[in-house]
Image 1 (cartoon, rainbow, N blue to C red):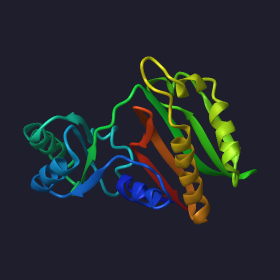
Image 2: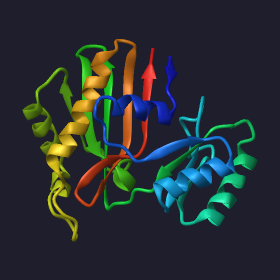
Image 3: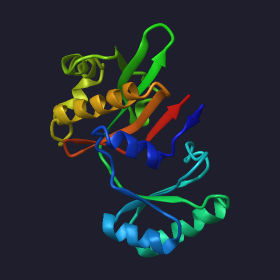
Image 4: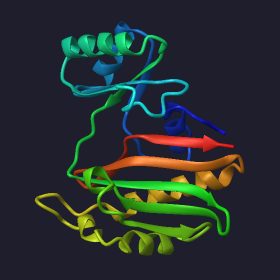
Length: 210
């Protein structure tokens, strides 16, 4: 079993239509600064490459970097704490009040399954997920999304607009299509999906192959 890096996972999923944060792979601080300028501050800096799927546990994520001086400092800190890492990811900093998760896996009894659930700070305390057996049509995906106990978060909420449901279903369809396209894919984890304004954007992803 092996996993693609975050960058390669998102690239693969984007080829099936996933909407994800803008990002670039870099190898040194000059490349990082150039990438951040093109993406636009604030940015996120992460370690990348093989065996970095648990970036947060490795202290490999720097959020909300506001300018080049902050980026240089963050880059140096990540290099110091992750000496074997030679690849870094500069990414658009996406923020929003609502977060969700989505995934794909092969169930021993039912085969390919897609999942959608509540994400963010409440995900561990409140298990709120829904599942569908694949393949399924768009209507079933819409029903799955509305099956969540927290589905009111999809509506206008605390000054935030109603979530673009069509865009959200497009993300779920892209995950399903990616999983079903390759028998070697045994799991896909897209977490979090942050609602920026009314648009869902995938901020992190992991594709696992057998």
